[in-house]
Length: 207
Image 1 (cartoon, one colour):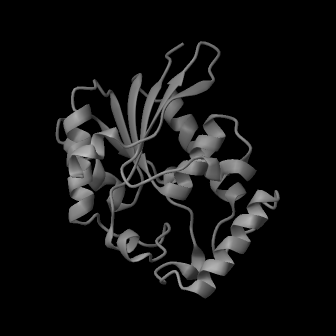
Image 2: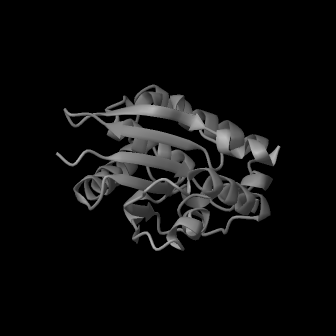
């Protein structure tokens, strides 16, 4: 079996992240100066890893975050199955106290197992998990063994839950920061284990 080692990173910081504005799959925001610095710091530490294949989402902030690796000539693919969750009508709006309460209500619904619950006009965890399974299938059946994947915070939590056979109710256990790294290694039985968890060692140079 062609066992995979997946370096899974979240995109670098955007101005929406900085200002606490809801992004989601409908907001195609670029990374900002801090995000570029984070991307460069990650590249400096991991540029010697012999990546066979790169996947990013259909949103510019993920491609920009690993552009340094693409520039090395490593084959790359935009995989829209890995796009961020859609936050529906809340995309592009600041996280006010009122919105924060609604967000907490939604998370509580998910923790209680109501995984078909979606924010107004948006996607539910089960909807996102369905396309994550499709995206993971593409990665696992695709070329190469050492893979770099760049995606988004909530989508990353669902991706990790699916690939690790983890209960979606507890997806928030997978913490993340901008340009953090999860290193996943496939075992002989086809399952995956986490070798690095929300690692930010490469960002220490940024202070």
